[in-house]
Image 1 (cartoon, rainbow, N blue to C red):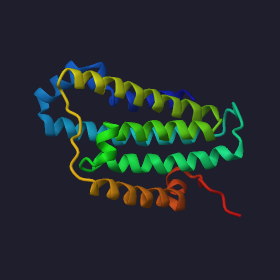
Image 2: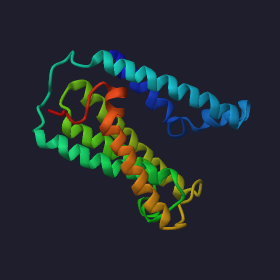
Image 3: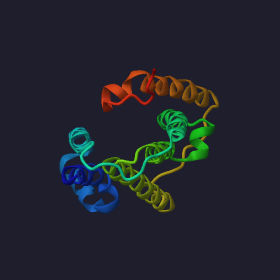
Image 4: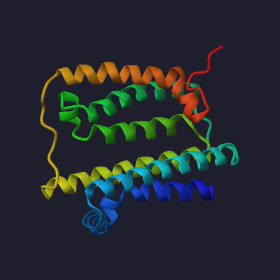
Length: 195
């Protein structure tokens, strides 16, 4: 579990640099230039994510179960993940109604992902992982609101409803791929057990 906690601190800490150490971030941008800092941050993000996946896999099954979710929670999780997939896609497309109304749909997707997985997973390592990600998304949302008030960022401006259609269609395809095979390939567990 210590390795999992360390990996979470590294991954989430790296993604909270703008929040907890804005001066350091700006110093790195001034020293390295924005493209190089972006590349370094991206490489470190991938590295810490891989470390996190490794640490979670090492912790899996070692600590028993905190709670046994009812079977129907898995169905609720799968439904919430459909909404999360649509929000995630909406967050990277130009603004349709979904992005304009949610303001930060990627953060909504992360919160839905974490919350839905807390509903369906009662193992201590899963609880630590998903609570950490839920807290991270909440902190980022608070930070975004503060940056918005300071005028550092602006809210997405509605462009076209066609991007809502794209978000729904691509989100459903992404969700389908995750359920069909991606979740099992990446995590090692099928979200729906057949047979």
